[in-house]
Image: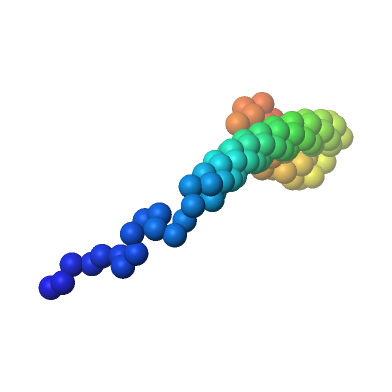
Length: 101
């Protein structure tokens, strides 16, 4: 089996100025990509935190609505509100307690 080899040698028809310019542009593009990735990750984290805060507020509102419905002896509607709140914040133990009573 014959070994593989390029016909032209590296740098045969490429000037040093052109190769240096190409390397500088490649390094600049790499920095831009890294900066874009960083800003994208930060934006994603901020969005996730905002959504979690919104879920917590909506869950608290549903919890309070369920409590007022339970006080008015509208138990089925109260349980529905608490179920909706549990979908938003499944780690809230007080919702499970209210639903159990």
